[in-house]
Length: 463
Image (tube, rainbow, N blue to C red; front, side, top):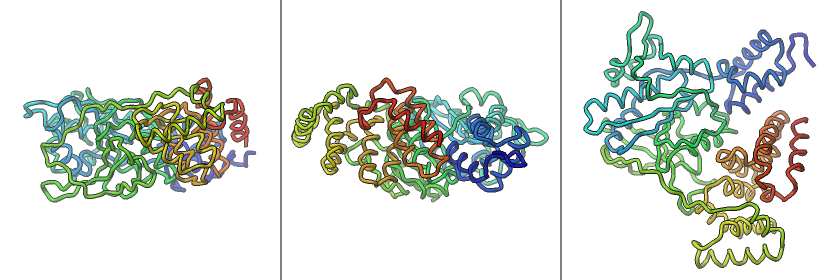
């Protein structure tokens, strides 16, 4: 019911919606300004209006910080400049939460400057995105005020000036620099296209992310980062990064400045664990000129047929026999293990409550397969032991790999304590179920028909 101002929601509800849609913490004053805008522009702040302004990114301008300028935090650019001679092919770079685009242009300026005197010029492509359509439009035009070129990035000023046209009240980026940069609107809460990046810049935005959704955002980024690829965060943000796919490292440059960054792990036994502490460490880094970005690694993913898994589990004696054979083979010849039997064994052991046995089978599964199935089963391992924080992390990782993997979305909706959050999650899970209902994923979550889960989600959505 609307009150006298036309409002149907409290600022707390709008703040919760912002967290669910954008994954960010909000300031009360910013939320109040957004609410005032909604009432003035649309005459209401009801659920449909919130959905409209959040899904389109229209609300982002009120809730996000868009501070940006050329060569901000120059130590990262020094690191990149030192690494360029070691690239032997094209570089794919992503600038996440790029705001008005100065970071992406700074990277292009640096590479173009390097190429002028390089024996082997580097070809590159930069994808740069932000949730706010207005700042992306600014980035595409490349017109900035006088504070876009500041003194704290002055060591790279000589690289910027050849690519900027001086205007009366600022600068305009020359069109020649724009050809290898693609600016687009994207929400970090959603997975990216399967493009693989050598380097991702995600700087000075992570501090605004809600603790509830930090792992999900990092999962979406790490999913499109090449093995051994690099992730740069802002100087003040590295201590807050804890993710099973990323390893914290540091390096001292020639001026004595220490640069912290994260490197995507190559899948190895024991590396996929929710307990990994990836805070910045002191791992040795090759000196300038020897850093090499590897070619794309071929993964040894298991061939898993959900229907075949279901056939095994439908017969209790067969499931028990398969589980025994898997456990015996893991001790002797793990390379000969069948993927369908391995998944069935994990599910059978979880059903029995044998978490030690299930954990051992999962350890092997995760070293051989990094699909949404492996992530979901690790989530189930924690969920069934009432370790819900750990379970939520792996359900999010599973969804980041496959948005149609609805069992993970179903579980996430059940882990929501706040009513509005549960409704939003239920809606997303329903969307995944619509896309993946014919893929027999229900085998992995209990075996009931998809309509059973659909009805549960519909009730959650309705409140």
